[in-house]
Amino acid sequence: MAVNTYVPLEILIVHIYSLSCMCQESES
Image 1 (tube, rainbow, N blue to C red):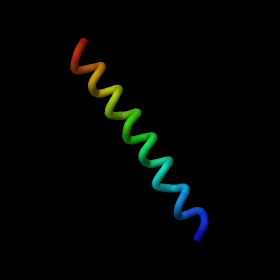
Image 2 (spheres, rainbow, N blue to C red):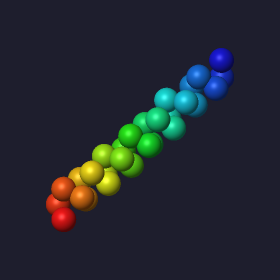
Image 3 (cartoon, rainbow, N blue to C red):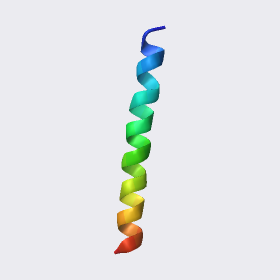
Image 4 (tube, rainbow, N blue to C red):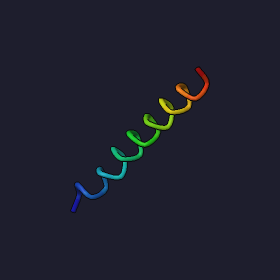
């Protein structure tokens, strides 16, 4: 179950990355 603590971190990073991309696209 150690992997379970690593998965949320990856999802969080991807989520933030996607959000940043959307923000940049919106600004342009």
